[in-house]
Image 1 (tube, rainbow, N blue to C red):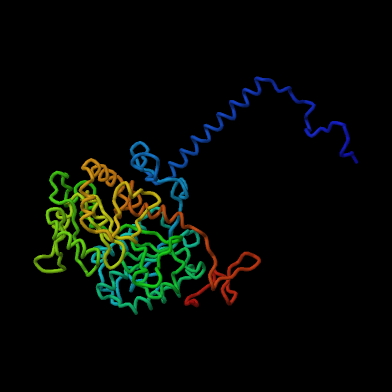
Image 2 (cartoon, rainbow, N blue to C red):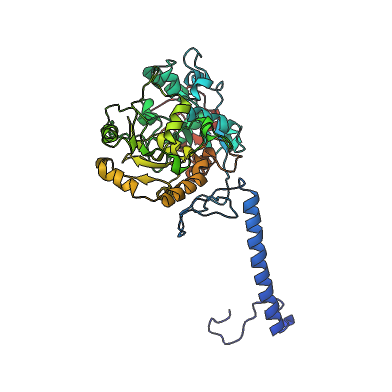
Length: 462
């Protein structure tokens, strides 16, 4: 055995006696090869990333630039930070005929609720997201390859139109879950639900028992003013934009065009009902003191004084600043509507959350003012802002408002595309719930030791 301290040189190369001396020419050639390989690899990576992305991708990340928004050759690009370089996910959309009870959640107990009726108002996003995911290139029809599962339901609309009451909504959801093996496998962690109104997931009374681990898409992030707990969880849930009327979000010619600043009659306006809310009542009182600066008409639900859609937006565009106080809940559709008549939205809702906040710098396109300081001081502040600054905020808002439009993910920029990017950050493969167990050979079984592939509904629920 050779000694570890032997001074005899050891030969580790099988063919070292044939080695050619390494000259300077060899060194230069090797360096050139390394540099060439580096640049070719970078070019290939860039080409691969762009060819596999949804073109063009969006990038509205905060930067050190004066506007906080960056573009690449005039195209807004989504940041790679935490998202990946391109969209790569597969979503399974449950079919309405696949599970007993889904049709009731979509059309009511007797099927009388029409989808066209549910496209209107704040609950329209519930319908639009469903329809757009059905058409999405990221939809899969194979459950085993899905990253996420979308559960369609129009329960806000169905409830408002008398298709189901609160008790029936609760019972129907529970019945649906008992027929979904993949929901039970993950404990609902990879399932997506949309709740588009101020009530959020509280519309489903037993949400905390059944979908407290699921991904919830909602414009409403805070209900602690009315409930002891909120259904929104910043770790897993996603804020989505409100549903602005299609007539205003279409490309080219919206029904109501913005006015030049010089032709706007008011400094600010608030178009909504008082509903006994402190912030709204303050604005209405303020408008009586300063009627030439602040417009706050007393809107009616019905009758000859009710604003039609066109009249509403014609009033909204007639001010430099559009005020968005809270109502029954923290979120407000007026914030999103403001971008489409090109007035600067002023958020007067302290607890409101906004969509895509880690991508859009809202301080560049809007104002948030304390709801407790609504008074003459507030109007003085707005009046102190120059038209040049207002025009700048409007121009930047024009760049990002496409993210508030519920269009297809094939469009260069849309709310659904933004939601897909956010969903990509939520993809985690779970096969663990209170009714899921695994064995040494990697198989997943239920409490009766039945392998997952053999699970049959109805399945036990918590």
